[in-house]
Image 1: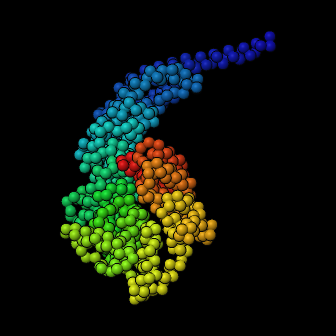
Image 2: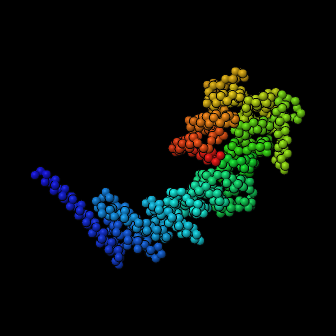
Image 3: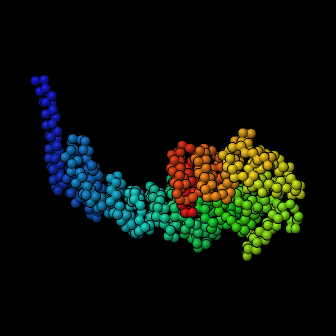
Length: 629
């Protein structure tokens, strides 16, 4: 007897549930039937309320891309009917019908994609409902619209591409992506269309002139709100790889009106992009620095030391912008020349530039540091040549080396038609330059250069610098802790590979034969310890060891890089570690896999650690390079 109330209440709930289901079906049937009446729109609210799935058939007939007057209302109703919640007892019957109705939803969306009134909503629904099988229809919509003299579906592009790029692009779609990237619209969200188009061309490794030119222009695409697609364009160009180099070099070397860059002029002028931004700006050198292609070496070297002439008529804000751009340009060219540039012609032009008092001093010093980071004997010889030159026939302890340098110079001067080499300025002796030049010189030196360094700044100092104003300041520079430390390091490590490895790790090194010691615990400024470790990392990267030791060294560079904090004081060391991995790492197998895994680990640090994003981009560029190498 006590159970009766419970049974009674359960029965009541069951009856109510059945009643709701039957009522739902009955109501839906009534309203769906009314869609064929005189005023079908009067029942839209009720159909929406009951989520009537059987309404899709008549709604599909009502949607008319060519003649329909209320297509948007019809499509909004269809979108509201999507996927009734099965957990809600009110929609149980409609939810059961939903799967069978999916083809009708797709049919309606395909029709809606053909009208500019409904295309934006339809593309949005395709995106939200993840209807990847409508990708072909979306591509057709975009291609047909791009072929019109005046596109009508621009607002729908972003939603359409969101689905299109979910899968790998096909080569047949390249022209579409080129056109989407090459077009600049003032439509909200179109900058996102540009981004997706650039990404897709990168995935395609698109090597056609049209694709490469579109990506180069993409480096300068900016929306009205100030958004840009620079990172997307850079990554796409790196994925395409070396085929883009001639186009970039053309920009660095071109003069106004040159046919080879006319496409850039035609793009820049109507879009208000100043000549100093694209032709003499920092973005082209930035990409070239990450591509590491030898064809760019001389053009970048010559551009690096070109006198900077500020354009007339710039506002104060633009003067600051121009100054930052030019500073960055030189820094990116410096980064490139750390990796590329070799041969007599390159080194002679570099020597001339560093001796030239008319070239910007900062550019000369940045070039010196670039050569120092090469860590090659040729680079060291060139840097010594900036402030010292043996007289022909002079008898010295280093006469053999002097004769070799003389022969090397004569060979370089014999390069036919090279005016840059023929007009060699005298050695540099200005104290303000030499004082700052000494550290790059020390960075470049190996053990064999110590005698010449000592001779220049001890035995022959008065002869070379006596008439230089501020000669005493040069001598004072030698006594600074960083210079003393660098010279101690070179003496302590000597020619021992193991000693250089220990120094790179920041460990104590003793060379009894040279009576020299490098002891980080005695160094007062931590920054100088990292300078010494940078020197060691560079020296090891060109040490010419066996393949086995190269593999071990690559692993050491990577582990050291991973443990390094994002601190500007360590930027030189971080750069040296990247150069080390570039020089001794392999583009296949276990090392590349570890490098790619490390890149994934670093992704999460971009939003919380300053500098992480920039260095992650450098790591990306290294990975692309090693894959190609």
